[in-house]
Length: 367
Image 1: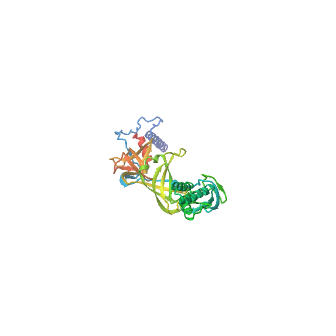
Image 2: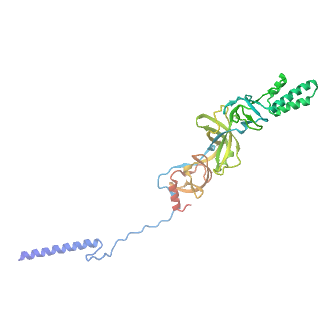
Image 3: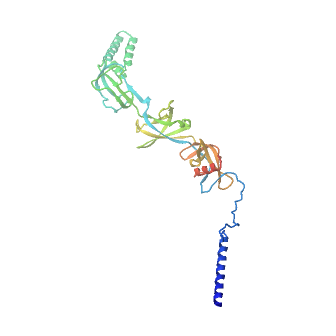
């Protein structure tokens, strides 16, 4: 009996101790043994506010910077165009009389001729009559001095386009040939031939067009925004695919009108083509440069354009912090901008990830 009572007392004590321990754990977790919320709860502390610093763009990632450089350099630009024949080197062969072609010497288109070469032998009744009149004047002047009449007959032959050597032949040989020869007035290539052997022709009809190619033009296309600086360009080098030689060209004329469809102007360059390698119709590239002057330069990657204004990110006195600064630039070539205002020689600016710098600057209301 005594053992049973002792055992019961021990079980009761253990049960009470277990229940008390469970209640203590619940209270530590925030609830009492009854399930109610604990009255003492830890409240998180708010961060202490600090004084707002000056808003600048702080570099949070690795950036590349450079300094504004000052160099003696020249503006360079590349344009394209076509080789064309020089208008002053084109000559039309037009007879001032009607007639018939007896022999056609220049019988091939694009043949090359030299000045004084015979192009065609023709019969022209008007010219033959003028030759006879001149011969009669010579005979009459030998009997009775009539120099005015003689000079008038000779002048008529010249005005009809009769070559000087045919006129001298009348004087020396005392004979008026039935036929008249048409000679090449210049050396060049026959670009146009409008007559065949045995055919007739009328007054003012163009029989041949001869073009000399020892000097040619290049008509270069310029965009409207390039016209302002064209006066500063002084040296022009022309390159054509398939020809290794580089040709020096001279600026001669800026055409006074633009192509309305392309908004381009035409600049005429004159090129010495004594080797005649350049042909009309060739597509060519011209490299133009201006006189060398001292310029402040920055890479094109160091400038960003916003709402029509250019900006650069200038290093501040605090390491790793940059702020946007308004600048004025103009293209120098495909690598550099020339700085006109906003930056000085030696200023340190950012050259990469400008879009990230721009976003940070907007968030800090720096614009």
